[in-house]
Structures are given as structure tokens and as C-alpha cells.
Length: 400
View 1 (cartoon, rainbow, N blue to C red):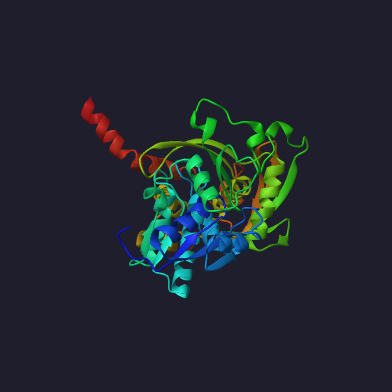
View 2: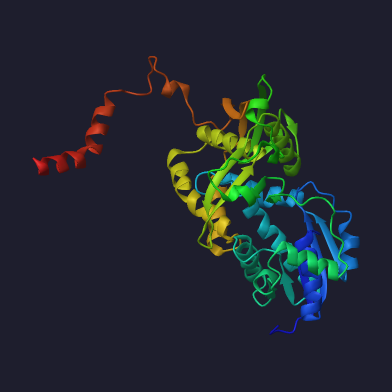
């Protein structure tokens, strides 16, 4: 211990790791600890957290319902950008971390704390996401990352520490996988999934049925957008969190949104993860469909060229960076006319577009038709082709 710490705000789940961290912080730094737990749709009971945290030594406990904030201010902005990491991952964990870290910093200000702490390990991406946010929002805050400091580097060591200090531990068999869940997704890592040749067990999945077990009858839905954001399903208006939860149920019922991915972590190693993102998968397809008839071609192509950079910034923890703010401002400006309705058919793992309409549609039947028209002179295409092929003609002439 090299720094004197007076009070720490700990991101606390109530599980083994963060329960041990809470007591370890008190012992190691002789400090007060305030715990913070966020409800972002992980579907876990949080009632026990207040008592458990205080019994383990916390001087104060915050439990905040951030589901609406998470979807409105983090998920929806990313989906307005059609953000996707390495062509597949819809950034479920990545989008939650800056929200949790931001609220930690706010609580640190309220409580007069001089430090924050998290339970992320020293090998993964989450440590970067938490700490990038801490530094961006409070550059002088002290950061304590126990997994980079202590010698409790196994579950056995953690259990021994908990038993020694009288920390109650669930008698339930621990989950065989490391998982993270919120309103956007659930992820699974570890155990046999560390072998990329082994397929995940069917009984692992939580949000989705297998496509083989999905209903034999498809389901039609209509998703309404206003300025790039979904606002209603089948004409029923909903809040952001309600809408995403409803899409999760619909997608899960039809086996939509499973992903088995080997991705590149920011810290440099490859990692295999399995994800369920049923509502997000439907939402991305619907949003891209809505854009297809409402967004100008060159504007769309420019925005699309920025998607890999946007996703990389989110994945690597730069949500509160100046380049991210500028990107989001531009992307949001492209969404002014992304308003209308998309009709989708959900069937055995598939989300199939069945229609789209908008008062802002740029699609003109009288221009696009193969029938006789008076707005497009096909002879004009000859000069268009010749001008665009001129450089190719010159290159070819030089070779001959």
C-alpha cells in the first residue's frame, strides 16, 4: 500500500469476488467503503445486497435502477450507429461499463470519496473500460484494482478469505462459466469454452431457445422508428427499456441472436465468447432497413466507413473520449429522417425483413421502375459510363 485512502466507492455485485474485495479494501487500506450496485437488467434479485454489504463492512450502500438510462443513453446511441465489433459482436458488456463507472464517480463526489475500485481482472477488457471512464470524468481520483495487487488468485483462496472473515457465500453450485448479463445481452466465457473447437452446451443458454426448438409458426412484428430510435412494437409505444425487454422476449422465443465468437481483446490476446443478444439482433436489422429508404447514399456510405472506428472506441473503453463525442454528434445528425415502420418475420433463428415504409422515404417507384417512365433517359447512362471508365481506359492503353 503506497497511498493513504480515506474512502472508496466499490462497484459491488454481492458475489464472491466483490464481497472479498470489500473486506480486503477495509483491511488493506484501513478505509471506509461505500458500495454501488447497478440494476441494468441482469434479472437478479438485489434485495439482499444492502444487508450483505453492510454486514461485510460497507458504511453506505447505493443500489440504483439504471435500466432506462442504459438503453436510452448507451444502447440506442450505439444502435443509431449500427455499431458492431469485428463484424459480429453487438457490444453488450462494453456499453454497460462506462455507465457503471460514471455513476461510481458521481457517488464518489456525493460521498467525498477519494478512490474508486472494481472487480475486473488484470487480463480482460473491463479493467480498461472502468478506468478509462474514471480518468476521463475525474482525473485525480485514486483507482484500486485488487486483482492487480493481491495474492488471492484462485477461487480456493477467495473462499478461504471469505470463510476466515465470516463473509456469507451462496451454497449454490457456482456457474461453470463466467457470465455477464444486462438488458442488451448475456455473455459466457471460460471452462470448456476456452477450447474454440468445443461447441457450447445447449443447457448453457438463458435468453434464447435453440432454433430447432423454436415455434414452427413464424411471427410478424412491426417496429416503429423516430429519428433512428425504436419507439413502438406493433403500434404500442414503450419506454426504451420496455421495448428492448420486449424484443428480447420475442427474439428469444424464436431462437434469434446467438453468437459464438473468437474476438481480439484490447489487451492483446484472443478470447472466445458466446453471446445471446436476441433483441439487439432484431433491432440492428430493423434499423438498417429503416435507413435503407430514408438515408442519402453518400451520407450512408460515409457513416458506414466510421462504424469500425466507433465500435473499436466502445470496445476499448473510450466512451467519454473527445473523438467519441464528435463521432456520436455526426452519427446522430444522420438520423433526422430515419423515421417510419419496418415489418419483420421471426422464424427459427431468423429475422426476415418483410416490408418498410416512411413519410421520409427516398425510394421513388417512378424512378426505379422497369416499366416505361418519363423521369430517366437510359441513353444518358452511356456518357456516365464513359466518363467513369476514362481512367480505366487510360490505364489499359498504357499497357498495350
